[in-house]
Length: 93
Image (cartoon, rainbow, N blue to C red; front, side):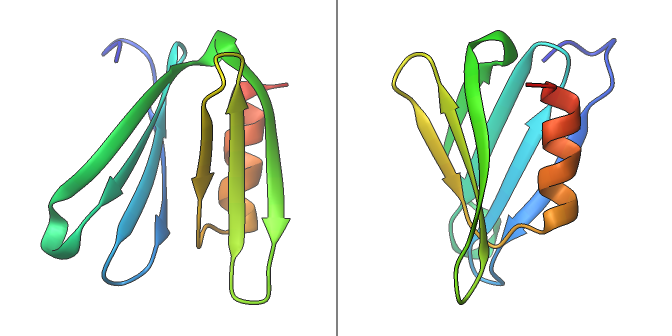
């Protein structure tokens, strides 16, 4: 990530499995952690390749669905509506 730009970070997930979405002017990075803070996996997508961002409300949680032009889809769980609004504003689709 470019250190000269502002980084926006939103947190989701559960107590045992954390999920973080970080963004700057160029990239969106999704990180899903395992137990006790270990990183399970991460996905990096250039902001210019993001096609859509959706909010899906289920009985148990709010999911953020981010789709890119390269058939990549990120589904983040247990995020807030405020987090969704912050991401949508930064991406400006």
